[in-house]
Length: 185
Image (cartoon, rainbow, N blue to C red; front, top):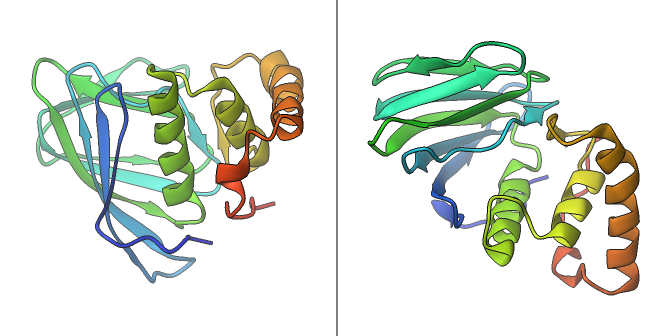
């Protein structure tokens, strides 16, 4: 399901996050994406869920704050590994004043390189942490079986996003998504 990217492949958003996808390697149960993740102080992805993937991050430098939905925040320091199991809502960030650098993997790869590339591009388009509304609606509607943002109200995900996605199609806003991978069922 991965598109043809040349590795290493780097994405960066306007809010202080950078991912270098180093490679995609064959593994039992599907390909595994090997990556380096960087977050500037205070930066990191919002609470999110991978329904079909595990994500493992080992802190190389800096301090990682992380949280599972409904739990108290925790921290990990250099050499410590945090595993986010599939279906577990989570977030992480650079805790303190030092940039966070983690090495890790996401397994199976599925559409993750495309999805995160598109999310970062939509954030850069909006100039803030929230993706540009049409792109965000498209991504979170099409890939709802794979990814979720649990802190977005259900009404927005079930009513507003589909309407925005439909309007985006009518207005021709999704030409840049024509070759996007199919969503998993």
